[in-house]
Image 1 (tube, rainbow, N blue to C red):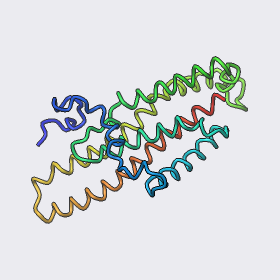
Image 2: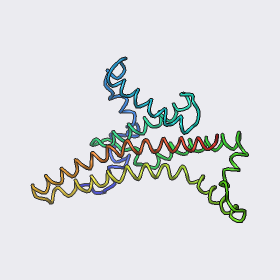
Image 3: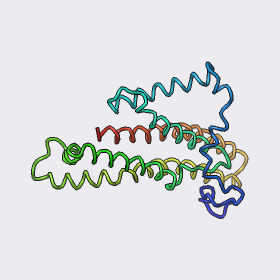
Image 4: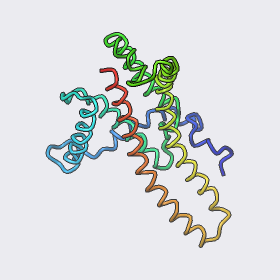
Length: 223
């Protein structure tokens, strides 16, 4: 039994794995060789996925140059690999840490804000007051919109880490209960864990899509 419930999320738990922050890169090392062959089924599947994502991002960016969506597709791929690999035993879940997610969210938000305020200053000021706001409410709307913009990197990072750590903690808690159950209950618990693991696989994809799509929306607001 673990002495600490959160020890599986501690990057310094095992001294032998001092480079466990590099776990998202393991996904690229485990890709099968046919992925890099053209044409191949795996490569075709990835190209279809990237085409769909590129259309989604370009519609939000309102820019019809595919190179503008490359950043967000790369962001989706990185988070997806990290989320998916964290479902395997003894692999460090980097996306469950605010250190990792905030490192992704803050530079993106900062670059969007700097670009917007330097190049589209008038638009950025106008964005602080929604269209149709009564004159008496304008000072309050400016404060609310300013706070909303400032907390965006935190909400992005907390949303991703909280959703990833919740499922991992639930699986850990259920695994700790097995030693106190009968064989019949253990079989039922394993079935529940299998269903929960399937749900976590869907969450891994959804959260990577949500993070990248929200980053795209924040980028579209400055143009």
